[in-house]
Image 1 (cartoon, rainbow, N blue to C red):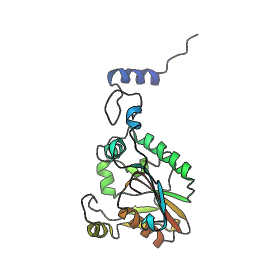
Image 2 (cartoon, rainbow, N blue to C red):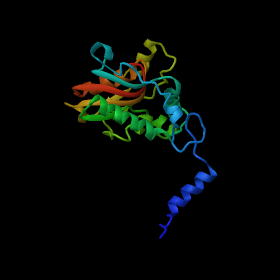
Image 3 (cartoon, rainbow, N blue to C red):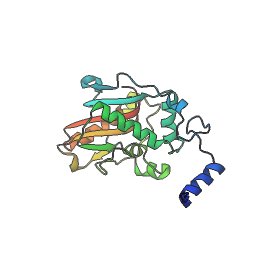
Image 4 (tube, helix red, strand yellow):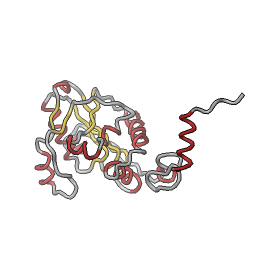
Length: 213
């Protein structure tokens, strides 16, 4: 006896026939959000985690992939191209990386964006990257809109982000893990850490999909 085909399954098949699925990066036909060929081009960042002085103002900083090639494109497609089809894959990769590193924070906090940017973009990419691991909402907020950090000097980056974040009392005595899509100079993460420590967080580290450790 043949099993009945559900309306959901039929509609999915119909949509696939009319609008075949494509890789979010190379745009070739693919059943997966990122095809195997593009995924194989993601380059692991080594060393993947740094502590102490090498963490540059944090207790530790961990990066999964280098911010180049297909991995860098995945970040840009998500943040600037507003393409979210591959966000779950990125979130799954981060979850596996977190397990491999044996990170065990009390709170997981996505790096926040200002509400005005959230309205324009429709989502916070850092929150999407927490999809597989969960996060503690409203523990850290961006209270001031800032210019994009890209292209700014070190001094301009510091001035641009000064006082841009505020943490809640809920972080007091907690070990906090920040999640973000990309980590380069780390100024955003340092400002987040400053706000968290001001409210009593005992440890602040960051885990990013892409960047440079």
